[in-house]
Length: 565
Image (cartoon, rainbow, N blue to C red):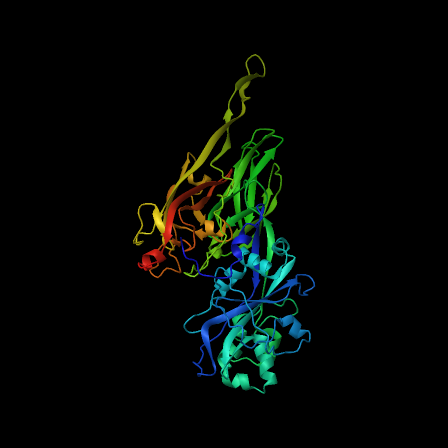
C-alpha cells in the first residue's frame, strides 16, 4: 500500500462534475510585478514562498459578494497567527474597518494541486502567466466552488467573478501575521508607519504589486503606475493587491469546417472552405470568383466552373497568427451563392493549459480511475473539383447552292476530379529512460512517462488541398482527462509526422516527459489519451484519437526507502 500524506484535498471529488457538452474559457484581469527584497531581521521577516490568496466570489453584474472570503495557501499556516478576519477589498472599500481578531484562530485551505508563487522573490520568482494559467483553469473554478459553496455550474457559465487578493504571512516584531495588501496598508496607517519601517519591501512593494488590474473592473481602477518600488498606502488601498477571474461557457469545437464558426490553433496551416452553389451553369465564359477576406488580406480563387444546379467546395489555405485572438472572415462572390458569407474564427493557444507542478506531498483520497473520453474523430475526407472543356460539333451552314460556312455548335462538358484523404496514427507510452526501476511498461508512480505519436496523412490531392498533421495533445487520468493538457512537439513533419512531449518545465534534467502523480493507485493502468488535430482538407479537419498505458506498481517512495515496517 502507498503511504499518503495528509493534505486537505477536495479537487478529486469535484473533477467528475465537469459538464460533458461544454468547456470553460477562463479569463483573467490581472497583472503583476515586484522587485528585490532585503533579508529582514530575526524579528521582522518574510520567507519566500510563504504566501497565499484570499478568494471571494462576487456577482458578475452587481459586483456584490455572494460568498464569504476563503484563504488558500500551499503551506500549513499556524492557527495562532494574528489576522484581521476574512474581509475582502470590496468590503474595505465600502467602509469596513480594520479589526485585529485577537484570540480567533486563523484558518486557510491547502489546494490539492499547489499554486504557483504569488509574491515575487529572488529565490522563488513569481510568473503572472503561471498565476493566470492556474486561476483561469477549470480546476481553480472547481476548487473555489467547493470551498465557498457557490454553484460550480453558475460560475462556469459566467454568472460570477472570482476576486483574488495576495496574502503574505510575515513575522512582525516577533509575531506572525497574515496580511492582504489592503490590510497591510490600513494597518500601517493605524500604527503610524511602524509596519512600513520594518517590512518595506514585502508589505509595500512585492505584496501589493503581486496582482493588479489591467483594466478597471468591479469599481477598482486599472493600475497604470510602475511595476517596481515601494508603493503608497493610498495607492495600495485604491488599486493594488487585487486580480479578477471569470469563466465563459462555450461550445466544444467539432464538426466540419463548412459550418460558419470554427476554432483554429495558433501558428498553424489551416483551410477555410465554403460550398459554392449555382442555379445556372458556370463555364469558362462566365466563371465564378470567390475572395476570402482574412486578417487584412484577400485570397482570391478564380475561374470556378460548376454545372447547373450543382455545387463545389471552394477553399483557401492560410497560416494562423502566433497569438490567440478572435477574427471575422468574410467571403465575396462574383457568381453563385453560399449558405453564409461571414463567420467567426477563434484562434487558441493550447500551451496555456499545462498541468501544474506535481509534488511529492500531493494526495488524492477517494480517487477513482475515470473512463477514457469518447470524443468524435474524423478519419477521412472527400471532395472534388469541377473542370470544363469544350466539345466541338461542326455543322455546315449553307447560304445557297454554292455558298456556306462551317459553324461549331458544340458545348461545354464537365468533369469532376475526386480527391480523398485519410488520417491514421499510433501512440506508444513508456517509462522515461532514466526511471531506475522500470520494467517494460511497468513502473512506480511519481516518475515520468514519455510518448511517441506517429500521425500519417494519406491523400491523392495536391499540396494546396491539405495540411499535414500539426497538432497533437494529451490529457491525463489524474485530471479526469479534463482541465489540463500537454501540447506535444513535432520532431519530424510531413505527411508522416512524429510527435513527443515537450521538455517538462518541472523536470530537473529537462526531460520530455509527463510526471505521474505519486498517489496514483497501485496495480492500475495509467492511460494517457491523445488527440491528433489540424490535418486540414476542404472537407474539414481530420482528427484521430489514440491512447496507451503503463502499469503502476508501488511508488517512487519505495525506491527511496529500503527499511520499511
